Structures are given as C-alpha cells and as structure tokens.
Amino acid sequence: MPRILFVEDDPEIGQLISNWLGRHDIEVLLESRGDLALARALAERPDLVLLDIMLPGQDGLSLCRDLRPRFSGPIVMLTSLDSDMNQILSLELGANDYILKTTPPPVLLARLRVQFRQQGQLSPVAAPSTPPQRLQFGRLRIDGPGRDVRLDGSSIPLSTSDFDLLWELACHAGQIQGREALFRNLRSRDYDGQDRSMDVAISRLRRKLGDDPHNPTRIKTVRQKGYLLVPHAWE
Image 1 (cartoon, rainbow, N blue to C red):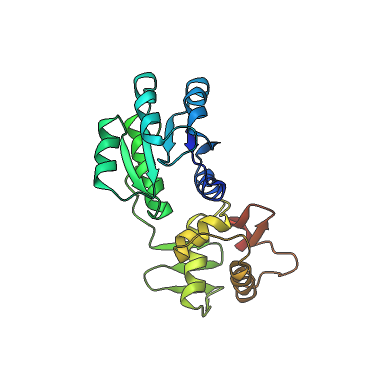
Image 2: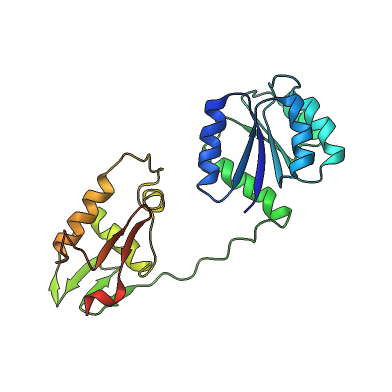
C-alpha cells in the first residue's frame, strides 16, 4: 500500500482527504506544521509528499526546495492558491505536480496514482475485459442487453436501478461488494455512511427474487463489508 505524508494545517481538510485516500488503499500520514515536515519525511520515507503552500513554521514552497535534494519520491503541491506564478515556482523548485484544492477527489486520486505508477508503486491498470452478455446461476437467468431477468422461466419485472444493482452483484457473484463500491459504480457518488437506500434496494431485490428477507441465502449481507450474491444458491 503506498504511503503519503500530507502536510496540511487545516485539520478538517486533512481528515477529509486522508479518509478519501484511505478508502482507496493509500495510507496517509498527517503533519500540520511545515517546520516539522522535513524531518518526518526523512524519518518515515513516504512514497509521496503532498504539500499545502500556506503552512505554519515553514511555507510549502520553501519546504519543497529543502526537501527535493534529500527526497527522491514525488512531491505534489495541493493548495487553494490558483496562481500561475506559484505553479511555475513550485515546479521549478522540484514539485512533480500542482493541484488545486477545488479539484474533485476522484481527479486528485487519479493524479496521485499517476505519480505512483511513474515511481513503480502501482501497476498500470489493465485493459477491461469484455463484459458478459448473459449470466445464469441455476434457475436464475439474467440477460444484460435485453435487461431481462427470469427465475424458473418466469419474467421478474425490475426497475432500471434494481436491474443495475442485480447485474452489478451478478457480475461479481461470489465476491463481496461493499456499499462504497456500489455507490460509486451505480450512483457515481461516495457512500456517506448514513444513506440506507442501498439496503432498501437489496431488500426489494430479495423480495422479488424469492429470497427470505429474514434469513437470506441468495443475496447475503456480510456484516460491515457489504453484499454477496451466492452463485450456488439458485439451484
């Protein structure tokens, strides 16, 4: 798992970005003072240093200047200062990238992953395989292009969102799908930890597919992890 030293004096921003990156398998070490960051970077040897510019003790630009000769990993500036001069100066002082704090978190993640790949920390993303057209688990048959679901030969009417949820679970049958992944893949947003609409949709699917809502065996809830479509439960 790649490690980042994130030097940021705003604890709320630090925690938000730390939590976001942590959910995507990046360990984040937080440091709130610029004058302590150099020693921490040299002692803990993170894979990347993420720097704010406006910092107590030492600003991010001078920290980048002092860090560059002694740290071989990527240095990325993350700042609210939308200034061409600051961007040019950062790059000339040795920064690998300059990112604004208004950048959406998925874009920030993608740009950090570019730095990791260039350092050999991550493997390039493999080309996606051709998605299946039809899936069958015993008596359950799902036609992707036709968006048709049949159980024991009988058609099961599903809404668009319910079909998409079933298809996502079926394409990963036998694998636990976390709420976070389902929200990102199906709703293009992050799970906030409070939204129960996915639980409601799962209950609705169970009811329509004849699964016992009190003791489900076909679409199981795995506590604190997510949901699992059991491929052999449809025989």
